[in-house]
Image (tube, rainbow, N blue to C red):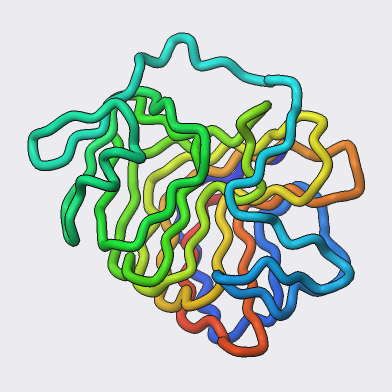
Length: 231
């Protein structure tokens, strides 16, 4: 298990990525070129994770002590994050408490501020696409473990997104494949990732489980990616 956290700021400013893997449980060989937010095309050497995909694995963690979650938008509470996202309008804040029941990947195409309070936990995947520029997400525990694990749990393919003060736990059990807590690609420029804690278990196969995966492509370079990690 690899655990990354700290309270000492260390900045990384990235101008151009063709392929990079940060905070990884195991290394990846080969390149991840020609990847875009709207395509599942991959290079021959590394399998491109599919949006919302999940591969069966023995559960490695339970959250019985976390209360059932609610997501609040404009004073209205919803039992699923999917519904809260659909009801939100551009610029709204979605406040989460407890463990949300969503298990699939939720596409987001509007600017939203997702904020966690007491015990806020998400096992679903979140995919920020064009239209979600300027969004923020903070105070969430991302549970990417066991049978609900996603190959990409937090997918960012638009610009100006802030990811701060979250915790990410990545352990899909015995599942085979490359799994990622955070995946940056497409138009993911001006991204700030700060104050997060990553706990990444080491895979038993030859693949890679990755905390932050930054993937440029032949059509678009990624500019101004700032990652503040703790050690």
